[in-house]
Each structure stands twice: as C-alpha cells, then as structure tokens.
Image (cartoon, rainbow, N blue to C red; front, top):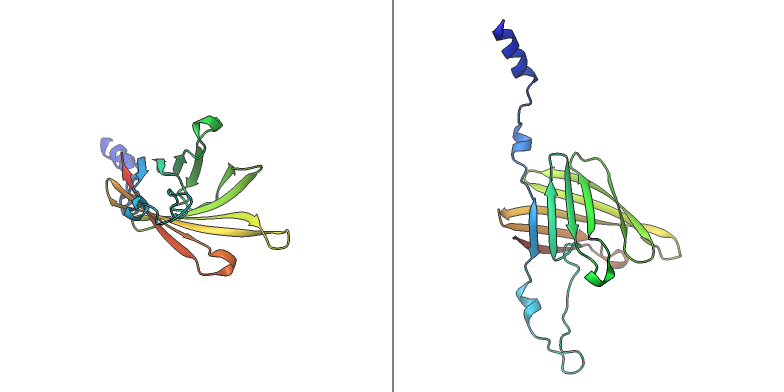
Length: 180
C-alpha cells in the first residue's frame, strides 16, 4: 500500500529540468560602471569645460534593481530627480516568451512598450518595440534588443542594440553593471 502512494507522489512531484537549472538569476541591486573615457576632462577650449560625449547606454538607469521569479523579471530604476516626486520606472517582463506590455510616462503622454523575452543558453534577450513619430506626422515602430549576461556573480553585462537614425545601421552599446 505504501509503495503505490510513494510512486504516485514521485510521478506528480515537479522535477527540475536542465533548461531551468542553467538560467542565471539576475536579481540584485546593480550600479553602472563608468567607462574610463568618460572620466577624462573635456578638450573644449571655450564654453562648458564639463562637456562630455555620451551614449544612451543600456536604456535603463545607472542604478538598477532587478527582481526575478520563475515566471517574471522586473527592472526598476530612478529616472526623475527627487524633486520631481515621481516613482522609479518599473518594467516587468514575462519569462515564458509571451508579450509583456509596459506603459512609461516620460513627457506629456504615456508610451506603451511591447516586449518579448527569450533565453539563449545562459543569456536573456529582451526585444522591445514602441511607437515613435514618423516623418509625415504618422507613427512608426522603433525596436531595441537588450541581451543580459552575468560575467560573474557580481558583473552584469547588458548589450543593447538600437535602430540607427534614418535607416542607418543599428548600433550596439555594451554596459557593465556591478552588484552591490
């Protein structure tokens, strides 16, 4: 009598699969590591001596908080200053590949982003599309791809690919975050 009950319990119990076991956990507080070039003084001979060339980075903030469950990944970062009295931006992505919708209010109206997530071995790929103004008053769709990888337990790399301006080649920016 005990054997059939034990066998039934073992058949019903969830079994971890190799696919879920190899996915890293990106959870934690992360801070962007500034590249050495950005700390160099400006070479401007006149005007604002603090002028620096920059890039759009990961598209997220310099400080991130990531929470991950078996079904969702959330990314939260401050965008506004404390004086703006606005909450941090919070994006939530379904890890099963279904479409995730996030509404972001920066400016005068909300913009809805549609994202899909895919695992490629130990990297997480987030592909996001959102509407942008078109050339003749219409709208078109912009797209970006963020690839998240853990180089070590304390180093998160986000490689972001964006469309180039006016149909030019897409650009890739590598952002390195440190845990803690």
